[in-house]
Image (tube, rainbow, N blue to C red; front, side, top):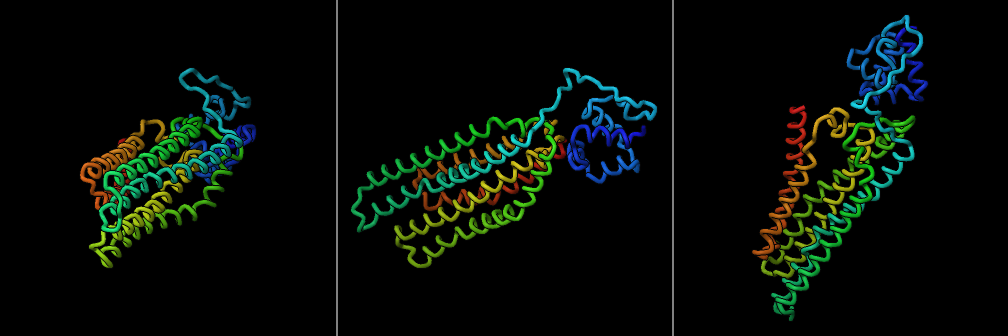
Length: 328
C-alpha cells in the first residue's frame, strides 16, 4: 500500500475532511489533495507531524511493503493534544460574543467617567450656576469613581467567564470533525461586519474632534458650552473605541479556534509578549491621563491624550508584530 492510500485510510478513520487535516498540518487543502493523489510527498518535517497526528510510525507511512499500521505510544514529553469539540467551540464563541459587548461597554464607561466632573465644574464656575465649586467637584469625582468601579467589575466578570478557555490562546490543540469548517464559515460571514466596525470606529474617533471645534467657533468664551461640546466629543469617541474593542474580541475568537495569525501553532511554540505590551501601553496611557488631569484639573485639554494614544496604537501593534516575527 502506497503512502497516498495510507493517508486516505488514516484520515477517514480520524473522521477528518481534507480541509480539516490541512488545518492540523498548517498546509493548504490542495497540498493534502496532492498527497492523497500521489502527486507529491510531504517533506520530512510534515511526515513526522503526520506520524504524531495519527499515532503511527514513520516506517508505516514511508514503506510500501508495511501494510499494517504500527501504532506508537506518545511519550511523556509529547502529550496528546487537547481536542476541541463542536459544543465547546460553540460555547466559546457564544461567551466571547457576550464578553465582547461587556468589555466594550466597560471601556465606554471609562471614557465617559469624567463627563460629570467636567459639566458640574463648568456649571459651578458659570454666573448662573449657583453651585458650590467644592460640592460640584465632589459630586463629579464620586460619579467618576462609580463609573470606573462599574467598568472594573465588568472587566473582571468578562475575564472570569473567558478564563476556562484560556488554553485556546496559549496551548496547541486539535479540533474534532466539523469544528474548523464551522468556524471558518462564521468568520467569513462576520468579515464584512468586522470591516464595517473598524471603519466606523476610525471615522467616529476622527469625527469626535468636530464638536470641540464647533464649540470654539460658536462661543469660545462660554466655558459651559465648550464643556458640553467636549462631553459630546467624549461620547462620540467612546462609541468609536467600543466598536474597535467589540469587533476585535470577536475576530480574535475565530482566530484562536482556527489557530491563525497571532494564535498560530508556530507562535504558540515561543513566548509571546505582545499582550503584555498592549496591556502595559494602555495602563501607561491611563496613568498619564489621570496623572496629568487630576492635579491640573485640566480635563478640557487632557482628553486629547486618548486621541493621540489611539492614533499611535496601530503603530505599536505593527512594530510589536514585526519584532515577534523577526524573533521567531
